[in-house]
Amino acid sequence: MKPGASANELRDDLDDVWLTPLRWSRYAYRTKTQTKVRARADADEAYEQKKKSKELFVEQRSGTLFDFLDEFEGVASKHVVHRSILSRQKASASLFERERRPGILGLDIDYAGNFDIEEARKVQSEHWSTKQSTLFMAVAVWLDIAEWDNPTSELPASAEVTVNGSLSDKEPNSNEHWARVVRKVEKSDGDAEDLYEVLTFDKKTETVARSKLRHRVFIKQCNAGVSDDKTHDSWSMRCFVEKTIEHLKEQGAVKDHKLKVLCVHSDNAAQHFKSSKSLHYFSKQLEGMGFESILYDFGPPGHGKGEQRYCIEL
Image (cartoon, rainbow, N blue to C red; front, side, top):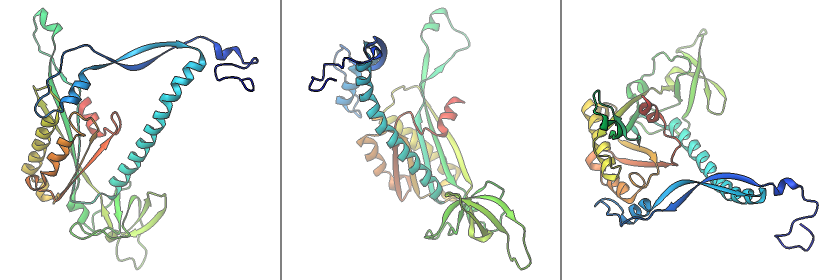
């Protein structure tokens, strides 16, 4: 701009590219005209009304490069914050996985898109009205307590271990840490037990006796819930989680592996996960489910869905 000029005045030597007409598109919300929404007893009526009154659409925009950059700045500034939160969350999730001990049940939950039910035979009109059902995925993960407490089993290369880890029924040691097995070291004269070379998270190698290594063997199980009720709300989530826990108890997993802590992870969808109703429900289930404590971790939507995404694709 010229010295002393207003913000709307441009410099005389400005390149023409800044004034070139551009066209772009962006996602935006617009208000829909409709009648009042009646929420279910468990739902937040104000939230339901707000959700139903707006719709997402693609808006076509035009202007100069200045106009485009002004709009892009607002979007980019929010995206930087989003990426920062996502980066911290991934680092935190990685730390949790490395420090996980026996007795912790991880439950990764999410709804899939409504499942299409294709019938073998249809009349012509049925091709235009697809029947659907709700598909809820819950991936349960816990450490094998027998493998953890076994001080003599053979450790293959790339196996996850906890160095200086205490037994499952003891308090954690202050110096225990995660590592991955590189190779088994050949014994020399005087070695009383097997030695292993391991690589720690910060890329340091250590040679450790087998008795000081806890083998981290994860047991993973995908539980799929199907319902003809296509409403994804807190009631639905509670039902599927309860059925999953009941199934694990019937298998003996909760008792055999002494699972006392429940760690739930989901995205932050307010309709069925991140709500006061869902948190209140879990806070009242310590005695009912038999856990000593429950941790709920929310992630941003569209990220960190983990293994249940692959189960959904199958």
